[in-house]
Length: 82
Image (cartoon, rainbow, N blue to C red; front, side):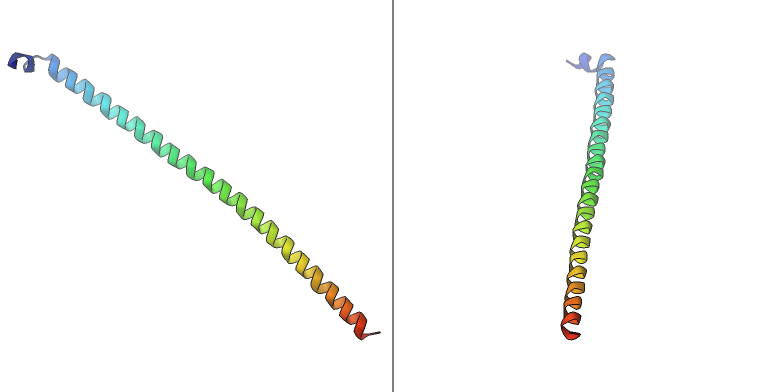
């Protein structure tokens, strides 16, 4: 049993497994980081698209309000200056 532990094969196998696990962990960490990064980029793109849509809607509402006020002012002026 003890001569197995003294074999040069054991430290070599341990080293190879350690390096393999280390490389696997780096690879997994890089994938997770990339997924997070690209997920955030995608989310920001969607947020900007929604902000653009909301801005267009608010602009449309403001234009309609301005038209309503202008029409009301014209009608009122027409009534007053008959």
